Picture: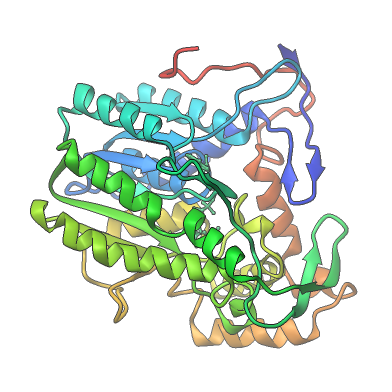
Length: 399
Ligand code: NAI
């Protein structure tokens, strides 16, 4: 059906998405990558798990349009039903596949719970049928609130909690444009364990083992998953909180996977990415205020990047080079975020930021723009007063 679509924000999520706006956002990202020099020795057959939004989507666009890679994208998105729009990731996938087809690039997508055995099996069958079983890069970029373990049937819920004491810090109510104070009760042992089971390395390991057993990994295959470290301001809620424990597990899994992949001369890597506005990060207390200040300082310095700039740089300059790795072997795409002058400037603002100076001391406007853009709103060149067809199919997915 055709209808006029406007944003409906509930908490940190927008429940509507605009198909034409999402398409424009994809086109803008593709144009960014196309303006860069082509990568001739880049990956050619890329599986992206968590491919429809945020870093995974930007990785898929960078691989396809930056090195002419064929891509298979796995994600868990909602189609339109009746008057309800599809999720943004659904429209992104439609737009990506159409743009790839126009450019003569192979692109197929699988929509469903990537944590399940069934979706892994469907993906493996597609890789065997279409690619003769030869993936040379597996990008793991799932961010999810819960996961059902396919072996036990147990569903784990992840949490964003501090560990130890109650944590109190500044945060921001972005819709009300108010600096607030949040106090979050500490996690118990179950919260920690459950968050590790959802956002740690279990599922990444299951994917790699399944692909390896099915002979789907090419010689010298690489796989990469994304983590975050961040500054002291966010440590208690992020790096030292439940999500940080999960990320430590993910990072340890990379080392195990590198051992596993030695049989095909492969390597498992971790990329430490920059804090950016995505559906996943919008849910984390404190972080949106940090991001609003960070954006202002990085823009002033001329070093600001968004997902597409980060992932284009990762694929083109870092993934296939030993440059820019820390002593744990992690690729530091957060290098510019963590520069001392940037962090000193952010800290100085942090201590003094209030509702009164939010507009002048932070880039809250840019935060809001990025947030709406995630759902296809606020993009130049899109007529938001015109009715638009909301029930659109992903070309490679049969109804
Ligand atoms: P996002 O919310 O934009 O993307 C999540 C992706 O996971 C989507 O494609 C979604 O469809 C997919 N997904 C969710 N549940 C799924 C399931 N059950 N089966 C299959 N696919 C599923 O998140 P974002 O921020 O791009 O996160 C990706 C990774 O990057 C995460 O590991 C996150 O921790 C990490 N990261 C994020 C940072 C940020 O500031 N946003 C910073 C550094 C790392």
